[in-house]
Length: 80
Image (cartoon, rainbow, N blue to C red; front, side, top):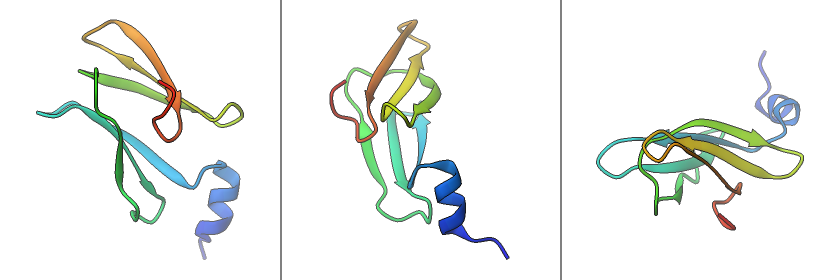
C-alpha cells in the first residue's frame, strides 16, 4: 500500500507546484493532498513554464517564455 507521508519524505517537499498561463497567469501551490491551495506568484508574470524546485536552497525557479527570462523566489513566493 502506498504511504503519502513516506513519499513526501522521499520527495522532500510537502507541496506540489504548478503554473497557469491562462487569463490570469500565476504559480500556485497546494498540499500533496490538494489542501491549502494558494497563489504564490501573480505579479509581473506572463507565460510561466519550466518550473523547478531547489529543495536544498528552498528556492523555486521558472522561465517566463514571453519575457525570455528565468525568475527565482522562495518556495512561498516571497523574495522574488
